[in-house]
Amino acid sequence: MPARSGQKIVIRHLPGFPFIIDDALHRRLQARFEKELSLWAADSSSHLMTIATFGLNPAGLAIVEEVALMVVSENWIPTRQSRRKGSSMGSRAFARKA
Image (tube, rainbow, N blue to C red; front, side):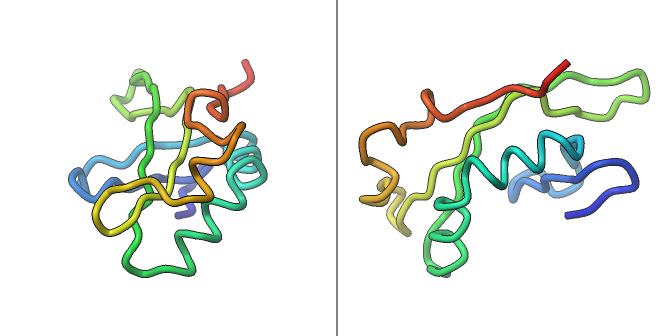
């Protein structure tokens, strides 16, 4: 979701607490997790799990520093494509460039 500066991630269970991603990290996120984002968009019963580290800026906004994505089924089981070799969350996570 676009923000004035960068992009926002809105977490379902924290709708009033947006997490900000700078444009460079957002572009890398889209490129690196293209398959996961496509799988999630194609199946309305799936969930997109996000793990991220963040810090608060002086204004109190949550700025994402590292992020990884994984698509899971409606029963919270990783999809077959997410379990393939080289596709685990740990090996696919990446950080914002300083």
